[in-house]
Image 1 (tube, rainbow, N blue to C red):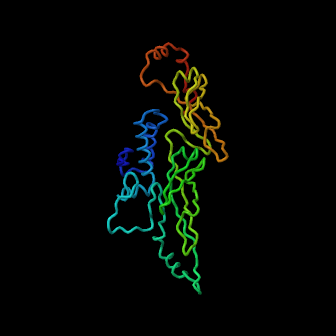
Image 2 (cartoon, rainbow, N blue to C red; image 1 turned 180 degrees about the horizontal axis):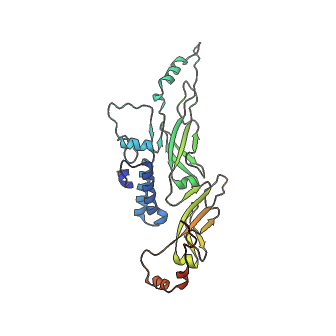
Image 3 (cartoon, one colour; image 1 turned 30 degrees about the horizontal axis):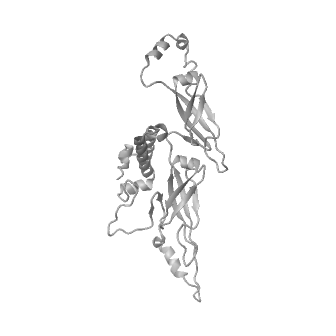
Length: 303
């Protein structure tokens, strides 16, 4: 059984959407598989954190969880004997704003009755209505493109193609997967709105991916070749000698995938990180480094 999502993210039940987002990003940065290669425990925790964020970042799912309608895995809880199912239906990772044909409004039923038959017994046919659904998509699936197997409210299971470079709020149309038509009319469509999850490392700007890469003092001063993650896979990145925190490097063609098969770029900002524990040899060197003592990194600052 999944843990309470509030517990998993370490937030109170009164937490705001921004509190939840910050808690997720903090944990994801610590647990992401790219930053913990081979650590199965961290990978399992990362999946738990992602699932908790998926539930609590969706206002409707969070409301239903708080009301006891779904459990921590997003599954329906058993309903009481007098529960009446109205217009909303749950579809696993989807949130639908309109239910099946049995839950159509009285207006639709009235039109069906009024226009069921023409004079002479000929029946009118009406197209079915559209369904509005919402699908949570991992960041890299949106950037690279992917296929998601999904279940629709009517019970159909389909493979939904998420195009390369898909964006948050983008709507994909599944033709003929909406509400059934009346008197033989064609079915409506299912309109799937994508909700792209944030990534603990990457930040997207159009087709460009930006992120910060930690490097050691030795790598920054002397230069080095270091392994760097990108949405298109890990690459070897050349850190020039004399690099500094804030130095910017460009990895061409390693950013967001485009429908034509090309990619945007990755912009990598270096961050010099000292060893976690004091280093006696480094301290001794710096005490005798006269040029370093004369250098004032704050020269010219005003305030």
